[in-house]
Length: 106
Image 1 (cartoon, rainbow, N blue to C red):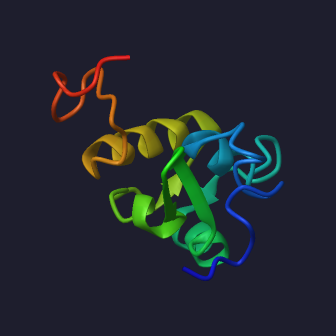
Image 2 (cartoon, rainbow, N blue to C red; image 1 turned 90 degrees about the vertical axis):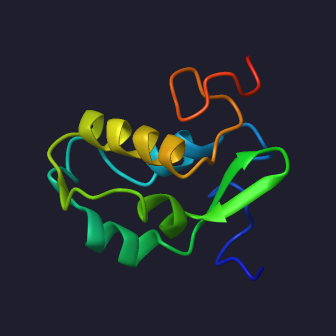
């Protein structure tokens, strides 16, 4: 896929040192960006590559397809929604309390 930037470059996983939620969190400023409108955030960053693990990269919009709230009041609200979306969309191999807790324990 043609990504707007390198999935493993500085804006992405930074050489596979950052994954999923960390990459998304780096796109916001906790002090200035909240409350944050979901649709505006996806319009700006939806095509950005999010490395899930060493072999899987998805556009951020695919993760946010599983988020129903329209606005995040705080970064904690955003983290909770993204985590729930990652579990609901079966993006993670490890599901401590997700859809399939027996799948690949850490």
